[in-house]
Image 1 (tube, rainbow, N blue to C red):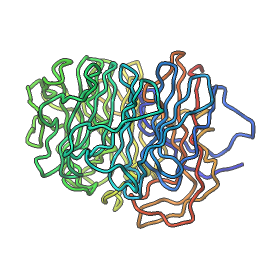
Image 2 (cartoon, rainbow, N blue to C red; image 1 turned 30 degrees about the vertical axis):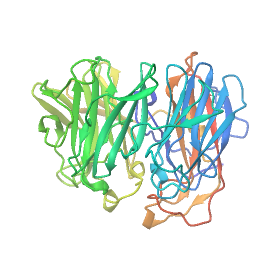
Image 3 (cartoon, rainbow, N blue to C red; image 1 turned 90 degrees about the vertical axis):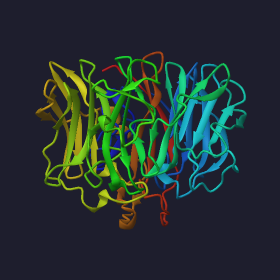
Length: 487
């Protein structure tokens, strides 16, 4: 059986490769054929499939597994099972996502050191929601490791506007990041959970990033600084002037002097004091202007073999072509080197508001050390097949390119199960064709045996946060897979 070419996504850092990996799979395995790497498959629940919502999240701890998602009626839901069991318990919250939230319907899940469950989601455009105040939609379990009862709590205050609430757990401590304001006009705040007091406290007594009422920051990753192999915290972001994607500009970076989140400096070692704003010119990596090709989903950060930060991103070159660049601070300045030499033009789809299908146009990965003085990076655009670019680690110059290796279990799982064909809707910049499949890794990586868990999520794609006319695809099954890492 032949299936059309289609895109799948692996969200998160899989083997520290890209947020998005591309495979074109033509041949569907025969019925009953299974990959040796798939050692467990469990259905979670039917979910909404008409368009892409906020991605589900998977978390494993203390012999229990949790999945947060929007169900087939678009309600925020939490499932829990014991490892070794295929039976789930469910908790459905009185929070129903609407079209206006769409792919921005971000949810976030975490467990504190005592085992209490924390779940939060984005409020904008919900059909049903708890009344305000407080502004955040935030729940905490009444008992550790129990989804039977939750209480809705004040997280920050009754007045602050928390957009894109996101948890990140670092060495057992939960951090919480959110934007106070709107796209193009907002500040980024940063909180830490105190397990003993069971309350949230500010990491800083001011915003971490200040838009000055003129712009907002789009932070790489979960919105929380990334803890690096050098024992420092690293923060990567770009600024945006309006809700229009094309108004992204000024890629920026800061790091802590050590592990203390209150002591910051530039890449050159100049002390800087939060909040950081566009006035902190010493923090700018690449001063790309609005309209210059910066895209907030297309930024990444990782470390080379010498624990030096390498920043990866997209912008237009002097001829207006899309290119992927890598930047590393050397001596007194950022060395910026293109990883691609494309003649691809992004075109009109670069601008616009609402959830745009950026991953259907350009993709990149962070670099990863490949040994022998080389780095690896995945690059792709909609006119060029995916390539693994091999870079000289000393110069970051491309040496050669390779075709990506086919991974059997990924190839098999990313074939759409639904026969529904998505209708192209130009006004929504919605591509037609087969349903899309995403493989979502667990937030905590792998279980105690070293095997990895993934969620398989099938949907109709991004729609710019607007209604999709019927006919609609039937709900699809959100499914859990346990994958062996043995080759």
